[in-house]
Each structure stands twice: as structure tokens, then as C-alpha cells.
Image 1: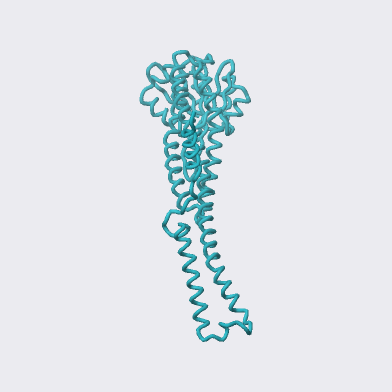
Image 2: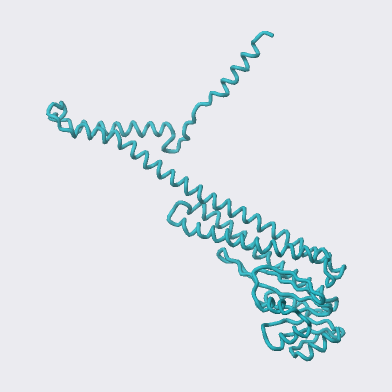
Length: 348
């Protein structure tokens, strides 16, 4: 447990429970960082009349944001993101208790509070303005932490699209499919969390609570606007991942169709050859070509000729090679034109 106490224009650091109690009793601006469950931390929370359920939530890890308004304080749980790697996002939880003259925070990762600590040590004006201003700075940094992670997700999704077009339908395709499904599940969890967090920030931005003065409300509204844009980006990424999954299945299906097309062409070419071999393999006594000296070269030549004719026909139709396939002739337009002309020629 570590506290920052504002005395005049000076910021004093302490980790002694008695000094923290005295500062809060004297109504001095105080920010207390709770490192973890301890006798001093629990004693301080009880002295401040913090509800036992709130104490339980502070020490526990919750996957969903939360907002509770009590008579003497406002309790907020928000989540920030630490990093995004390989379709996985590390969420960090921040617990904030906003009182009349004090702010209690519990940030196990230290990712959010360390940025505010540097700012507060540089100039203590933030704490001098009041607890709501310090809470605004904490929530603002928590939301700002989303921006680099969202940009990293954008880069990973663009790379995922390229891998989908390159590897779908090949031996390297299944890992890409698993990555797509992992991204889909991740964005679903982010959206579920962001919806609750958006509602919490909206309630604070409306100025519904006595712990948030009216002059701070516009700044909380700015935090809400930033998070709303991030939430919209997350929704866009969900649509993008769904489209990537559809593209993967489509590319896989197209490549499977190409394989089936190749096998069909081979089967079609082999069918007449097999027929010729079957006819001349019956070995009837009265077959004219059976004892012919040139029968064998004749059968092979006939098979080669049939193969060339079949392949030439396929190529002419555009079913193989680089030629565009022939489309069925559209006669509906010409029929409609004839009918229009016939109506024009009809005497009125």
C-alpha cells in the first residue's frame, strides 16, 4: 500500500497506515494505491466504511466492468488492454474508489497507474483539483491504452487476410483457420466487455453521481467519446473477421472445385480411351483387326487422336487453358427487342 498526500503545494509519499488515516481525517487530497490484500489495506478499507462486497470485488479479478454508487463513495471497475499477440489480448483490471477527498486504486499490473504517477509526481495540480479529476486521468489513460492495441489488431487482421488468400485449401490452411476462429472468439469477448464498459462511462459522463462535479463531466464525456470510437472499431473488426472466414471457406471451395475439375477432365479423356481398349481387348475370333499386323499401332494412334480431339474441344470451350470460358448466348434481350419493334410497327 502506497499513498500520495497533498500538503499545500507539496506531494508527500507514505506507506504508513496512521499517516494515511490522519490525512484522510484532515480531508487532505489523498491517493492510495493498494498493492494487494494485507492487514493494513483491509483496515484502511474498513475505516473508510467500504462495503464488504466492494472489498471482495477489489481483491478479486472480474471479467466484466462494474459501477456501484454508495452513500460515501463511487466504485468503478474498468478494463484496459496490455498487449495483443497472435490473436490474444491481455486485459488488465483497474479498481477505482472515488470518495469525497480520497481515491483508492487497485491496479495489479501497474500498467495504468504508473502513467498517472509520473504525471502526478511532475505536477501535483491534478490531485489538488479533486478526486474526480484524478479518476478522470486514470480512466483516460485506461482508454488510451486501447489505441496501440487496436492498431496492432488491425495489422494482424490485414496479415490474416493475406494468409487466407494464400493458404486456404492447402496443407498450410488449417492453422490459418484456427487463427481466424481465435480472432473471432477474442473479438466477441472484447465486444461483450466493451458494451458494459461503454454503459458505465456513459453513466459517469451524464453526471449522475455526486462524487463527479459538474465541471468534470465534460472531460468524462470526452473519455466516453474516445471509447465509443474504439468500440465501433471493434465491431468493424468482428465484421472483418467474419468476412475473412467466409473468404477462407470460399477460397477452399474454389480450390477444391479446381481439383475436381482437373480430375473430371482426366476422367473424360480416359473414358473413350478405356472404351477403345475394352473393344479391342475382347479377343473375338472374327475381329478383323485382331490378326492385323498394324492393329496395335492403329489402336494407339486412335487413342492419341481421340485424346487430342477431346483436349482441343475443352480448350476451345475455355474449360482448360487460359481462354475465357464461353457463356451461354443470352437471347432474352433480342426477344424483348423484337417485341418492342413489333409493338412500334403496329398501326394505332
